[in-house]
Image: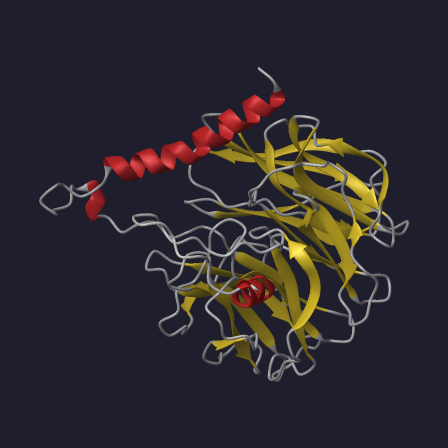
Length: 421
């Protein structure tokens, strides 16, 4: 069996088991529930995490009642505060896989420091949403009511947001947006009248994928700039990776739809009037679907960036690691991670220390693994961090000073590992 078939088989099993369990616990024909069905549905496990300017670890996640909660730890996860339920009104909150709550802190400490928590709210129509945010002016002691970050009010795709604060203290929000596709559909007019008994089709337009939109706030989320388009033709359902450039500004890496339908990745500075996006990966993966598998990005000590991404290259489905130049162009040959089943990798750097973490399902358990380098990516060491038979989130990486931490949430716990190089 090829590595592609093995990966697809493992992924299919990972998807099939929860679906099978849900089917077995379904209500009876008369509407009554069996004993397992009467239990509360487990909360989605995708969480947001960040270190505050004072060094505390903050985690935002849903509880079993689908409420957004916030908890903190002052000792790297050994002890946690009681989860605090945040007021999100009637919002539904996406917290699954590539779509998760996010946290960002202002650059200063003190009683008037600001912090924001963002999330995507799914709307009634399939694949639609809006980007919502809570804001605190008092270091997180209280939060505002949720508000919509973008100005476009259409019930279309505004999803998969990423947020970050640059060196000047400006808050940046980026998201996947389908307003340009919607405009083209409206401009095309109604489709021809269908034949009797046939379904009405949407007018066909020549627009690939979605777009990357963004805005920025210089006052910690009190006000925002107009919505600004960073690029046309992004993939529709993959996370956007952000990293700091040497001057403290931000750069972005996302899955892009290159003509006619190659789902590689594009790179661009997060700025107005910047250069056109650069093609950053060369898998040439032709597929008319979104893989729900976004990239990771981190600065390299020697200049440029470290990147990780999933793709199928010459029939081989793998997560790969590669170096990008300062402009985002690929440098040298990408290399696959040392795990054929690796998925949803993250990358982070602290000087010459580089960490890549991922999860890997072997048919029975999910493994949490790291690939660590102390020489800016010249050499790596593989490390097993843990495993579980429970449901689990994609692994995360955080930086605090010169230390790197791996985080992994399972149905039983949130694991924190300070990485040693």
